[in-house]
Each structure stands twice: as C-alpha cells, then as structure tokens.
Length: 446
Image (cartoon, rainbow, N blue to C red; front, side):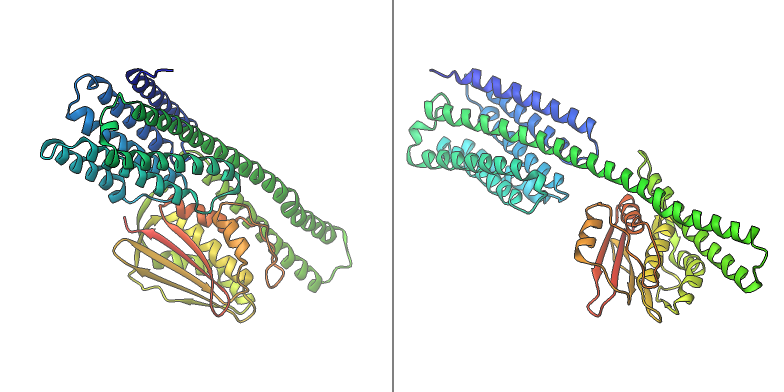
C-alpha cells in the first residue's frame, strides 16, 4: 500500500493537537498531578513542527527542514520534562533547551554554510536518540509497583524509538541518497513508526495520570477510614474513662482526698490527650482543603521556640527530659507562623513521647543563601526505615506507644510534612548515629 507523506504529516499533526488538548483536560481534572502540562506543551510543539513540514513540503525551506525539526525535538524534551516532573524531579534546563538549541545551530550551519541534508538528518536523529536514552534511564529508576506495567510498555516504546533514530542516523551517512528525500519509502516508514510509537507513549502518559489518581483516591479512603478508627477508638476510650471517673466521684460517698486527687489528675491527663487528638485531626483536615495556603512572613524563630517550650516543658519535666535550645536570639525565618508553631509542637511532643527518662532534645538552626534549616535531635528510640518511608510517601503511620505508655494518633509527623510542603520546604527524618531521631525542616528564605 502506498503511503502519502503529506497525508501522514497531517494525521500526525492532528493527533498531536488532539493529545495536547486531552492532556490539558487531564490537568484540569487532576491539577495536583505533575506532568500533564509538560506533555500537553510537548504535543503542541510537535504539532507546530508538523505544521512547518506540511506547508513547506512542496518547496523545502529553512522553516520546514531546520526550524520545524528543532520545534519537534523541543517537544520531545518537554515529554522528558513531564516524566521527571511526574516523578517529583526536575529536568536540568541545560538538557531541556540546550540539546535542541545545539541541534538548531548545527543544522543551520549545514543548511546555510555547508549545504548537507544527510548530516542534518544525522544530527536530528542523534538528538532524538539522546532523548530516548534519557527517557529510558528515567523510566528504569525505582517507582511505585502500580506503574510497573505502564513503565514496561514505555521502555519498549522508547527503545524502539531510539533504534529507529539510530537506523535513520546510520542510513543518512552510509546511504545519503535514500534518506535525503522525504518522499523516499524508507523515510516514510520511519516517520510512520515514529508517529505510532509517539502515540503509544502519550497514551502511557494518560494511563500514568489515571493510575496516580486511583492511588490518591485509595490514600484518601484509607485516610478517612483511619480518622473514623481514631475517633471511634482513641477518642471514645478516654471520654468513657473520664465519664466513669466522674460517676465514681459523684456517687461514691466513701472516697478520700488522696483518691479524689488521683482521679482528678487522671481526668486532666485524659482530657489533655483528647484535646491534643482533636487539635491534630482539625489541623490535618484543614490542610486537606482546596485553597489552603501558607501566609508567609518574617518570624523571629526564638519566639516560636519559647512559646512551644513553655507549652511542653511540664510534659518534658515529668520524664526529666532536658530541652536544649541552641537557636540564636536573632535568627529569623520566612514562614507561616501558625504552621511553624504546629510543626514545632508536634515534633517536640513526639520527641518527648519517644525519649526515655533523663533524655535530651536539642533544637538548632542553620542558614545559607537560599534556606533555613531547623534541626530537632532527640535521644529517643528512633524510627524504623519503613515508618520513615511511609511518612515521606504520605501514607498513614500506625501510632506507637511512647516510652512511658503515651498514646498518639499517627498524625503528628504527617501534619508536619504537609505543612512544610505547603511552605515549599522539605522535611527529612534520619536515625542518629548514636541513636535517637534527627528531623530537619528546611524552609526557603523567600
């Protein structure tokens, strides 16, 4: 069957415009998923490149032979940017723009100064081959098991694309007469299969987004179930006990003063833990609302430290824990005040909970040109690597009893991580070399 090159270019152009529009809709459906915007831009750029081919096909010109190839290459590298963005990474700007721009410069030289179509085809092929290799390297990195099947398809697609570009590049040098003409059968078939592979890649991108949406929905369902369990168990238990104590104090006429004081202290302790639980649930629920943003201002860090230590010192004194404050009096940070107070309260409270009697908790802060890093270090029992990874992957962590039997919700560090991210910061958890836990909260200076 004879394939008309002009019709093929038009079909590829139409498909890319359609896929760009679909990617734009996907981004509107799932704005929190990173990647679709880059894939939409890549598709539109490739369609613009095809438009250049289409209108300069009858009489080859600079636009159709050089500029259009540059735009197409840039579109593919936006695909690569989207892959890394989807994975939470960032593509180096020198790679995104540098390789296509080098292609544009070299192909311009071999168009105007040294007229050689085979060398231009060779350069263009090597650039798309480099894109394929970079995409394969990115896809082979560890990822969620839910993406494994899609990644395998992408791996085959990118490998095939790279192989096609390698064949095209070799033919442009070894057999230039068969590669110079766009209407040549070999060129047409290479363009045909390249377009087919690109379509597979774009469908894989869409599948990745919907798998991501499905995973997020499962996390949200698990989160709601976890909250219901907390409310049913962790809140019902203390309130039932408080009610029983009140009933005993109300109707027991033989109670002595010592017993009454003991019950009142137990009631106070249970009320405090229940209030802390409700505060954590309220803060976490607030962070899940759409449009919930950080209102960052310049804050004197010592004020936050003093407020938090005043609140938690009684809790630390019960376990004879030494709170060591190494933060300079004049240190300032750029952050949301309410969020920062919540982060301090949860991290220090957590450190007290998991520290033994006569332990230590140290607070410090370092600064550089771009960020401020607040360090919390305790002499506690540390955290398992599984729990650290679960928390960093935004999964719920089952609450663990403290060193003195303290209960919790498993929400504290999750809230800290979310509030840090809301401020474009980063929270890192490490186990100390001498035991205990080190938590670093890094916040940008502007």
